Length: 591
Image (cartoon, rainbow, N blue to C red; front, top):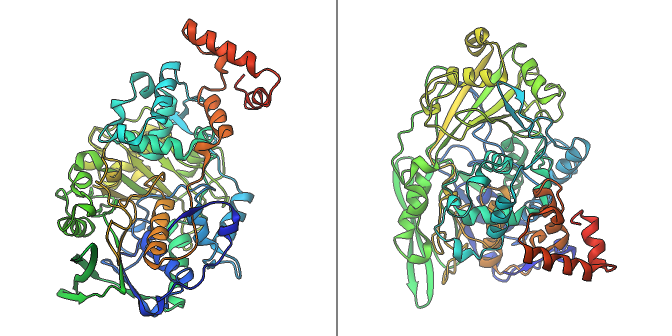
């Protein structure tokens, strides 16, 4: 497996890998990473669909990319997916997946046209004082000291950030900035999360720094991710004869060491309450999604809070990874991510409006008609003075194909679940859907006397507690996450957010698809490059642009510098005079 860039290999079709007709594949889990791996096996590996088996613990596919209408509860979305144009592997995949709505076009075509015609941006990113404009005014409001700290983090080597928290490398002035407010609410970072992951995010998305204040960096699907992304993949795979096996839990993969080789020799699984063992050969490829951010999620309803009854490390995906990891150090250290639930949980809620009373309050804040079928909030709206640090979003409506035309589906989340709210004086994790709706309506600016009646009769709310939702942000060191194909493995690969690949960032759809592509290309020896992570971190134009925008347009000549530094800078500027470097610096408003 190797990396490539440019369109020469992006448009090429690889030759059929040697020996693929004698191989089979077993994919554990039916989330995005596993489905993507199956698609790459079919498209690029040219493996016959009937030789591909997807083993899923639940009765439906999708994993964390969910979006369902439960007949007993209503519409449920545990989260949403923020995407951008430089998800190279994701778009490489979806250019080949046919749309379910538009004949003879791909999911990528459909997505591209949608976001061209209806570009995403926010007209109200942050509120305070119950729905009033917080007037962050697209400013990052970072002091020179905070900017220098963030710049220093940007240039720090990975190994110097192992097991360090964000609060270990960034100071109080940074945490008071609008930058941190935008960042933590958009990506769900806490100050105790990994400084390494923070650095990787800044590097990965440096070309989008200017789009953070109004979320214009983002693009969204037409419907929820389950209907827009997962179902087209499932239909593509089913048409190719791929075998989906639901209600099947894989509990272990047993390995044999044959010299320097590590061979997955047995799958241990439970199916319909019965334990089974499936023997494997070196021609049987095994792909395991290790760990899950939505494992052991629990749902509440209007009158019941979701129960956080998970013990550290509980859950099928986590227990499977733990069982595998006991066999070899190269298989990672899952306990680094799944044993500190207070640090990895937060809660979301799906609110469905039932009549015309709530939508005007939404429209007043987002300044758009929420029933237009176009962008509504343009991403999350963060309530800056919310004790839960509540954010909420209304994506294009309908968010579900079968959603009634007079209803809106709203996603709400709170980053702090263990502190009392502003209207409901209880921690979010103890609140029913009715109480969470009241807290949300309070921050929308609904008159206090109307809140209880509107929350009870004009909305329906399903809260969801997710104990592992930010597990992948826990501070880590080398080897905590296993390599996609661990050293010595000949028929086994890890997939998803807890497999390790260079430069890319977890908690993204791109990461799931990238690990899937790398796994398939490695185990089948597919002779085509995996698109490298977009290289904006090495592009001086992107760096100059981000530097100026991070400082709210202030030029470097405006910085308060020690005398010697200013002397050196002035000398450098004189040497640049009349050169293309000066021209470049002027074009990006650095000088």
